[in-house]
Amino acid sequence: MIDPLTILIISASLALLFFTAAKHKLRAPGQFSAQLADYKLIPPGILPGVARIIPIAEMAVFFLILIPLTRPWAAVLAGGLLVSYTIAIAINLFRGRDEIDCGCGSHPQNLSYWLLFRNSALIISSYLLVTPSTNRALVWVDFLLLSLMISLLSCVYLLIEQLVRNQGFSKNGRINDG
Amino acid sequence: MDNYLAEIIIILTLVVLILVISMFALARQIGVLHTRLAPTDALTITAGPKVGDPAPLLEILSLDGRLLKFGGPLKLPQLLLFLSPSCPVCEELISTAKFMARSEKLSLIFGSDGGEAQRHADYVSKMGIQDYPYVVSPELGIKFDVIRLPCAVLIDEQGVLRSKGLVTNREHLETLVESI
Image (cartoon, rainbow over all chains, first blue to last red; front, side, top):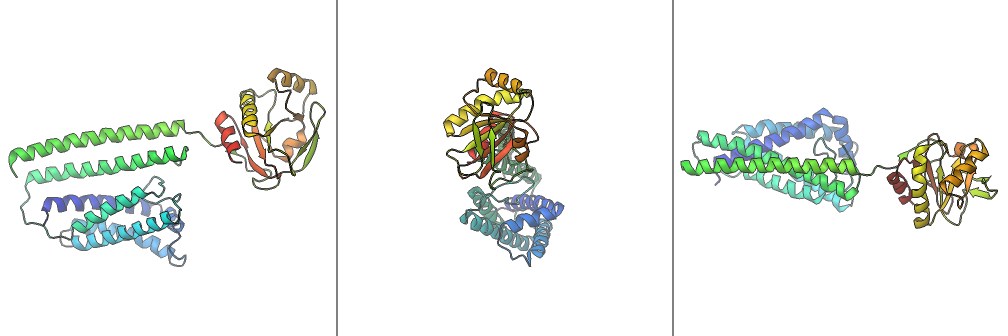
């Protein structure tokens, strides 16, 4: 049993994450299908279809996770998407192809083990949404904490992304992007 | 939730938020510094013979009358530095090129296109590069498709063109030589 505030914090943060992810993919569909092809996992025949479905599924997560009635389904979908990304990244890391772009966001980012940790944390949090919550009435303090927590989690996410990019700089000694 | 607990949690969350934002700012500054300090690759020139192809075979007389062979099997990898007496950037690269030739065991050759022979001879003594072959030949520049100076070309012992590029600073020349 978890507190309804935790459920709200997780679902709002995941909604934000999936919205930005889908936005990048919808804005540059050609780039995304090239990134997807680079993973060398999907047969070329169905690649365009998969490249079209993934951003739509991410958008669906964004909408459905915010509605209490559909939240568990959206959480399962989100978890499934994250599990498949993680497997794809793990396979390519295992193959030693860590120089490909992960396609995670606007900045080019190479594959690394940290992505597996990040995705595991996201998977665990999305499956937490399926667990039943206590029935507590939310008061105004909860909403204040909710907004603070969402901004805190987004900032932590950005911070870790930046640190990983810095690590890439020192490893390669040269620039991948500006 | 108790009122005082809620207050404390809100204050603490705000403090953590401020800390995280400042850490993010610091991390960004480190990223910016990385991009500023990162050495850039030798600027690639796409025209002319391609990297990985055999270098053009040439035999040219150097300024001091030695017959130089380019391409084909060689004793040492060749580093060709194209320069000109009228190019100020080239002067700065000469000492780097000499240093790299010594440390990496390369045979360093300076190349320049036409012009008065006397001017080149003066330049050679002024720069103190009498020990290295100096070629004055428009043909050499044309064969390697050198359009801008200073340009460096690296040929390995098998006579294969290993790298080629516009080199305007020490880092460019270093990355170019490292590609062997």
